[in-house]
Image 1 (cartoon, protein in one colour):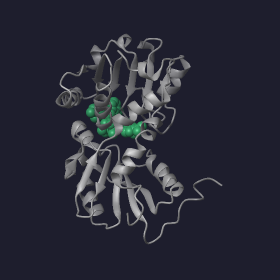
Image 2 (image 1 turned 90 degrees about the vertical axis):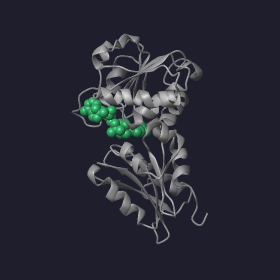
Image 3 (image 1 turned 45 degrees about the horizontal axis):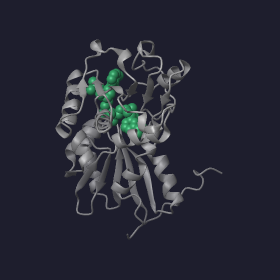
Image 4 (image 1 turned 120 degrees about the vertical axis):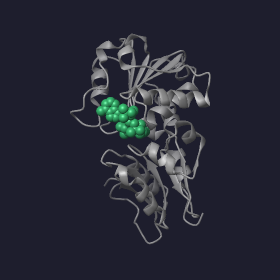
Length: 285
Ligand code: NAP
């Protein structure tokens, strides 16, 4: 018997939580939260909520109308647009201009926050895929982030608070890389964070690269970067969760480089998301 068979019964008092995305096939949060609800005997359920991009505002309006829909994890492609629909943003969301968690309050307001960057850094230090002690993983390191969306922005912000040497952000649409860097500087004006054009990257410079694009979600996706260009001991990170080992991660491992997989980023921010959306409250609390 697996935990799937033991999932808590849904009744008339069960509170609803969602994982808002489009499409929803790649989301992991419902599996994880439903297991926690079962383990902690919390009368709640989390379901995937598939809202097409152009119907986000209508979808959120509909969810607001449900008395027992309390909150949601938020992922691709809604993190930025949903931030704009929130009535109030926490510091992580304000800094990244993106949300990965929203709470629907009883008085009809929508609160948003973002814990992605915290999850990435905590997961990296907690799981430590390198052979140095955790406090040295990021010390004086040069990091290159691929992508400038909600997750990439949040990671850039959190890395900028660590003792790194520099963080470079590169993105298919360069303007968005510049915006991401500007957001970091709005919070941390002295941060050594830069936007870099794809054609100007010197891959040998980096101690660590992070794929924060969706490239790798599908089997036939192109690789986000050419591993042959990286230094031999460069730490290769992917934030994609499904598949757990993307082509990038598998190929990097084959070359003997240390790797860090995406599932830890969510694992290490679950408690923060759960607290924020009110998922861990017992009914009547
Ligand atoms: P997002 O806000 O939509 O941003 C996506 C980013 O990827 C943008 O910078 C976009 O570039 C770039 N991109 C999209 N398609 C691309 C392509 N075909 N080639 C090159 N670049 C491309 O998404 P997000 O929320 O940041 O999420 C990004 C990925 O991280 C998703 O796969 C998501 O599943 C994963 N994720 C994992 C965790 C975790 O806990 N492990 C948390 C959050 C997200 P443009 O600006 O040019 O469009």
